[in-house]
Amino acid sequence: MTSNRYTARRRAAAAAVVLGAVLVLAACGGRDASTSGHSDHGADSSASPAAAASASAHNGADVSFAQAMIPHHRQAVEMADLAAIRASSAEVRRLASEIKKAQDPEIRTLSEWLTAWGEDVPAQDASAADGAEHSGHSMSGMMSGDAMAELSRASGKAFDTAFLRMMVKHHEGAVEMARSERSRGTHQGARRMAGAIVTSQTAEITRMTTLLGRP
Image 1 (cartoon, one colour):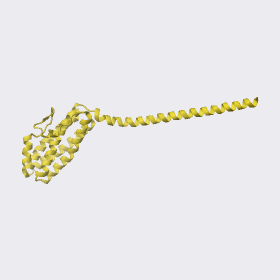
Image 2 (tube, one colour):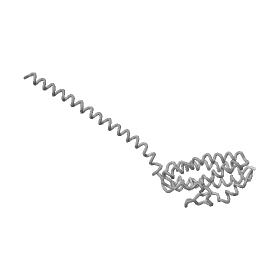
Image 3 (cartoon, helix red, strand yellow):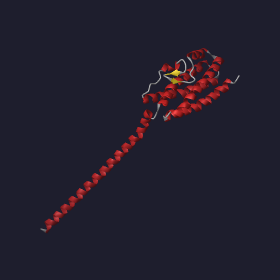
């Protein structure tokens, strides 16, 4: 009888040990799953703000800046392309190359932002707009179609002078637009680009003014 009671107690103790082990394993599994789930959420949350920023962290001033600056830059690139084949001054050709190298990537970036925001990207032929208006957005410093045609017919030193005078005016317009974006826009990338435009194009205006003053 005593032996039977001892055996029963041993069986009960063994069952308790097994049950405890099961509970411990279940608790560990739960913590692992919770930790894994938190890690995954952390990865998602770290990516989500970056992905959402381009689509949401902007306002109307950012849209106007991008839609106006794209054709404005395109016209500057068009002028730079003319300088590559018609300018007589190596320094003018070098300046034109630098302008194109800086503004081509900015055109692509501005276009990508507009697409992400669900806004229209100006048509490719918008750079030939006659005057300083496109889609209701002011584009200060834009050359008229007649002025561009006149520049395309010039060559040598006459081209150099015309190009520099026109590009100074063009840059002054871009700086004005960029300063407006800096004060009114909310998109961090657009505001950074605007700051870079103010800095680089102000320096280029100084260079061009110096070149114009040379005999």
